[in-house]
Structure formats: C-alpha cells, structure tokens
Amino acid sequence: AQTVTQSQPEMSVQEAETVTLSCTYDTSESDYYLFWYKQPPSRQMILVIRQEAYKQQNATENRFSVNFQKAAKSFSLKISDSQLGDAAMYFCAYRTTGTASKLTFGTGTRLQVTL
Amino acid sequence: DVKVTQSSRYLVKRTGEKVFLECVQDMDHENMFWYRQDPGLGLRLIYFSYDVKMKEKGDIPEGYSVSREKKERFSLILESASTNQTSMYLCASSSAGRGFWSLSEAFFGQGTRLTVV
Image (cartoon, rainbow over all chains, first blue to last red; front, side):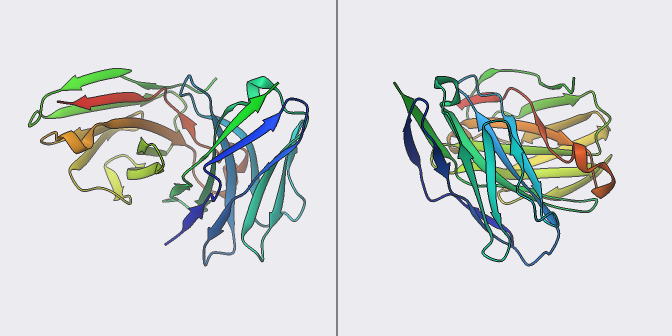
C-alpha cells in the first residue's frame, strides 16, 4: 500500500525568508503523480504544485518549487519569499495513474509565518 | 471554474441516526472521493468511486457506505452515527488517467464539519 509521510507537524518561517517542507512516500509503482495542497483557515483545499513521476525536471510555480528525488522517494516543497498569506496546513499527496486511481495524503505540516 | 459542492458546512446529529453527506461536482469528473480529516491524522480516504455505481474502499471504510447513482453526485452514508465519527468530511473529484494529466489534480468541496452527540 502506498503511504505518504510528513515528518514535520509544524514549521515556522519569517516573512520574506525561505522554508522547506518535507515529504517522503512509499510505492512500488514507477509512474505516479505527486502534489502539494494548501489548506488555509477557510478549509478550502488549494493545489499548490504538482509533479509527474516520469518528468525529471522539478516543478516550479512562482515562489513555490519542489525537489523531487525519485530514487529516494522524496518530494519536498520550497517556499521562497514567504508571505503572511502562506500560513496554512500543507499536505503532500500521492496518486497512482490509471482508471481507479487512489489519492493518498500525508498528515500535514502547519506552517506559521511570522513578521 | 470547477465546482465541488457539499450539501452542508456544519451538521449536528444524534448517536444512532442515519446521516447522509452529499457531494456534487460540475466538471463531468470520473473520480470522486470522500475523506475525513482529523488533527494529526491528515486526510484519510474513506471511499472513492471511479465511475457511476462503482466504488472502492479506502483506508477507513468501517461504519460508512457510499452511493453513486449519477456521475455528478457522490453520497457518503453513516448508517448509524457514533461519536467517534465526529470529524471534518471532505469530498473531492478529479478526472482520470494519463490522457488528462493537466487535470489529474483533485478539486475539493468546502468540507462538512459533522458533530455526533
């Protein structure tokens, strides 16, 4: 069974600084998708960034980038120039390909952004 | 814009009641999911469906059932609600398969906070 592990329950970063959130996963598949979702206090889950396993290039979306290490099964999220609006729960997620594809989440990391 | 709508944002039910949580999506997505979210446990998959009338158990299906009679609607049913089912419930939908990679992400509803007393 696929599992997703986020070992940092809470992280804190100062405004304008950079922070990295960790995620590891376990799978026997060779092709899959990885995601980072953000959940602000409003509870609405928002996609931050996604990565397809066969692509070696790390995904980037503005201030958000990932470090995807397929052999190590690691998928960390780097937030640059942190802003107060980045404060939220961040969830790493894994999804298999195919018709009946499950979407599995980690336990989340709560990010605080301080002035 | 993709919209996933859950029927209630807050719900209070009594122990032993049968509870229906409804979820509707408007993007003709094949896949739909029900999760429960608890502090420190993240999102745990209860059930998912990859087609009308098709369902698969997730990681914690005990005490729950689901129904998908129409493609756009996925219902979660608590046959006899118990206090340990007090939680946040999230519904999500997504398209299926590699051919729709750009839409492989899941879109979420706003969540239903269920309290069983």
